[in-house]
Structure formats: C-alpha cells, structure tokens
Image (cartoon, rainbow, N blue to C red):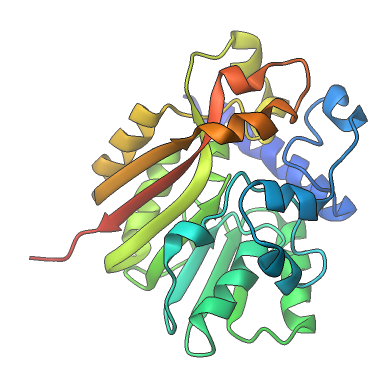
Length: 269
C-alpha cells in the first residue's frame, strides 16, 4: 500500500473520531453512513452491555468515558493484577483505561494512547476531574507508540487495530513495549469472508470498524511474525447479532465478526 493511501486512511479515521469526541456520540458506525445515523441510537451503556461489560463496570467510569465504541471487553481476557502497568491502544474517551486503573490499584499505572487530539483532551479532562492519578493519556499513533521499550505488563485494545493500515507494525510496537512475559489482550473485528469491493474501498466504512478487518489467519500470522507466543484468535459468533445493527441493509455480519486476540512476549534466553 502506498504511503499516500495509508495517510488518507489515517486522516479519515482521525476526522471521524474527532467528530465523535466533539459530539460525545455513541456507536462505532455513527459517522459512517446516513442509514446508520438515521437508525435509532442505542445508549452507550446499552452498547457496552451488549459487548460484554457488566452494569458495575459501566457505572464505575467517569461520565462520558464510555462512548459505546467497543466490540468486546478486553478486561475480561487481560487478567489484570495489582501493581501492573497497562497500555491501551486507541484509548478514546478512556473507558477501558479507567476500568483497568481500578484493577491495578494505586501501585499500578495505566497509559492510554490515541491519535485524535480531541479524544486525548477529553480523556485527560475526565482523569483530572476524577482525581485518577494512576491514569495518563498520550497523543500518538499506535504504529509508533510514545512508550519506552519493555515498560508495560499488558497491552490492551478494543476495536482499534483493525483501523490501522499497518497492523503488523502495530503488533510489533506492542511487542516492543511489553516486558518479557507481558501479555496482549485485544478485542477487535476480523474478516470471515471476502468483502465486496464497495465495502473494502470505502473510507467511511474503514472508520466504522469494518473495511480494514484482516482475517483470522492474517492476524495470527502477524502476531507470530511480531514475536508473540501462545497466540489465540477466537471469533465470537454471537457478535454477528449486534454487527448486523451497525449499518442496516449492508449485511456486514456476513463478512466480519468480533474476536478475542491474545499473545505473550517470550522470556529472554
């Protein structure tokens, strides 16, 4: 893929999520097509509940942190422990970061990275207002993380890596910043069937978590090529139900599904 195409894709994603941050909108697809935006919008709370968050988790975060943008719950597979350092790729309004901060406690730390200035500003405001001293948000691209080598215990992400035109680079960066034995815990969209060209080439559908999806096999290969061991990519077939509602009439559930994605950074010899 040419650099101009990658830059155009990143700009489309950045603009879409800047708009969501400004309006505090809910739902992954709401800037993608008129049909989506004309449909009745579920609340962010309802959307989070459908992808696996408990009512207690949803109620525990600062107001506005949950924007209803996820396609799963990476907290459920991360097995976070007290004192750990956690990195969230594409942290948005900070929903997963604030939940992770509760699990790692005052002795731990959570870092959110997002390429959209409006999202980072909104998340920082919530962290400051809520006195969340163990949470910080950094502006940056997930293909070039502003994070030191071997400095985090867990890398999480929720429906973001599929937005990148350089997914392999993202996973190599995740591997770089993890400590030996560190864990990758991701929920994301993967492709289960070839997409029509009108879907694959639509920049709006890229920003809507759809057009950029890689297959299970491709994701598995990228994880192993990055160096990860104990790789698992598990499609969640039940997710087709809520994916069907993202953009009624496009039958996206025939091409994509949510998946849990895991890996471990090997220990040095």
